[in-house]
Amino acid sequence: MEKTLARLCSEVPGLDVICGGGLVAGSSYIIQGRPGAGKTILANQIAFAQVRQGRKVLYVTLLAESHDRLFQSLSTLDFYEPERVGKDITYISLFRTLREEGLAALVATLRGELLRQNASILVLDGLLNARESGQSNLDVKTFVAELQGHAAFTGCTVLFLTSARIDESSPEHTMVDGVLQLDEVLYSSRTVRHMRVAKSRGSRALGGLHLFEISDRGIDVYPRVEAALAKPTSRDLARTTRLETGIDGLDARLGGGLPRGSVSVLVGPAGSGKTTFGVGFLGMAAPARPAVHFGFYETPERLQAKAHALGFDLRALEGSEVLRFLWRPLTENLLDKLAYDLLGAVRETGAERLFIDGLAGFERATVDPHRMVEFFAALTNELRATGVTTVCTWEIKELSGPWVTNPSPEILSQLDNVLCMQHEMVGGVLRRSITVLKVRDSLFDTSVAEVKISGSGAGLHVTGTMLDGGLAPSGGAPGQST
Image 1 (cartoon, one colour):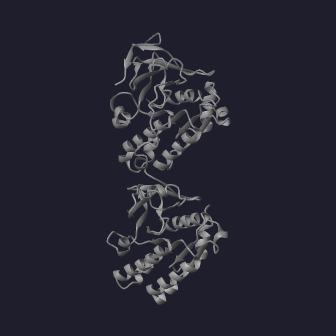
Image 2: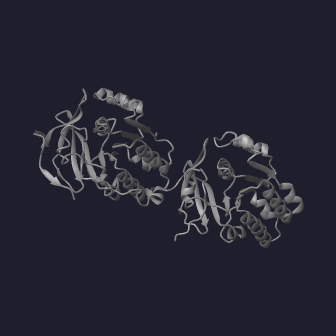
Image 3: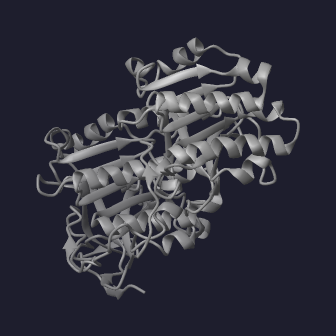
């Protein structure tokens, strides 16, 4: 019989995932990080969540600062409920007890308060002060052990907060069951926050660095996609049916449309028609077949105006909840947050179609470029598992020379279908074309097809095959993907 440990639901988005299912009830944890890293917010967010679940919390500070300043800071956060203070969550300062009477007196006082408050969660803010009050490592170990022993006897979970960097040889580290490390790191000119489970006794945690942010909601943790979604959350059904692209004349070249549940990429320079392709693709959405647009460049309003000029009413589709827009401007984004926002929208809407305008936006968001191949692998596998048919764009300067390295061959190999769009001047006229380079496990037309853009609901449409600067009837030579 498989044994499971009782867990606490922290209600901190993403935290329970990286902790292997949540904090283990009755265990002790150190939350460490330099001042401003978010330790106090995290501890209070967990504390108020436990209060809402019917538990009692004792929050003890060993700091010289008053609680009034703490409450003032917490009052700006959504999880803070002032009516709970003094009733379900009790804040006390034992700084004077520690300073004047020492660690032994502190332990005795804490025992009494835990029993009096009937607390099942103890937060001790200021472990560094307790550590400095000890005469030796043995004193610190004794303090932690006695407090742990009493907490374990009463089934109380303990959170120690400290601004000291506690390494594996520190007495506190050896005594506690888990360690959460919060860091704020400067990458070039931007600041990024990381969380890491540095220790997790008897529990399998999600290793490595995980991005998190602090907002009015409190702390949101974004587990690394390639770790949290190392395997898709549901089975990939590898569907054999086809989905219309919405581009007149293209489906026949693809062998009947795009394979359902596949991931396709449009590569081409600016102005070649990639976004216009997406407008036609999204324009096929219907009440029983919703769609999602995820973009980094054009706002929903500008995209809707462009679609209107082409004869598509995307605004009406959005109004009837057939189409959802997610716009994430290329400013400061968190890579994993982008992925979770995207996947959340696909799941919530049950989308049949997804258009991602600008895969390079994900690359711009990362602070660790070495992650990109594994990140895209996890993201595309999860998209396939949801059943959504995805079309994404990747802008390149030209379709010759170094373009095949951007996106990298390792990323291209993860995509099911590849279509190239191009434009060139022929006789003083700008002519656009599209070429199907790859449709996984399918026959397709390999000839270069000319495409034109028009309004009245036509949008992008194939007009024929380009041969040596001339045109042949649409439907050239067939080919087969590798």
